[in-house]
Length: 295
Image (cartoon, rainbow, N blue to C red):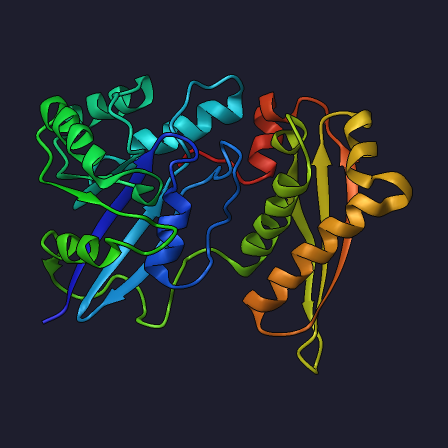
């Protein structure tokens, strides 16, 4: 008998939600970086576990928004915690419930969704310190289970999968068995370029960028021609993205092309353009154009 479960992964920025998603899928479908707010949209990932299909929703980091884009990201998280079979609340191994966690716990109380606390990054602390973290969160909320893991090393991930299995319901799978995400290839390619912007650029500049695929075509021999436009908010930012004699944009393009080729399984010709759209993160029209639409 086949089973399935809709599962939301939520938590503060940089807690490892996308790293966990990639670890569960076994492939890179969500971009990761050491900067907050890397994930902007809800990403759906499909994981096969025996006869069970898990449909994972990797959400943006829950934070205090400063722009309309931030408002959109927070609303995505709030919506994703409702009407699911299970919520995985990811936290760091720190014996303190921060404002982001408290806000998410409040949302869990409102939705009455089953919830498992996932303490990530246990490879960074002494295991004896976990007891204090577990006791603190046990007092804060009645979790169905508490699972310590390291999404980076894989420790505890098998235990987490076994726990997730308990919340699956009998019925047909929601997606084809060979599918790992519902993201279009164009969107994944755009996100891989944005990941390199986050990795290569400092401070606020990468957070003010958006990436749009303007051409995606496949030749008869399988080679993909890809053109992307990188939008930034200031002319000065455009200059930094281009770099001295084009060195920075060349580096970003080379790193992105390598990952895109690995994902697509074929050779890719990547061409990048850079345009300035001032304050696009506070423009409802531009946010819609870039695909940030509340359904």
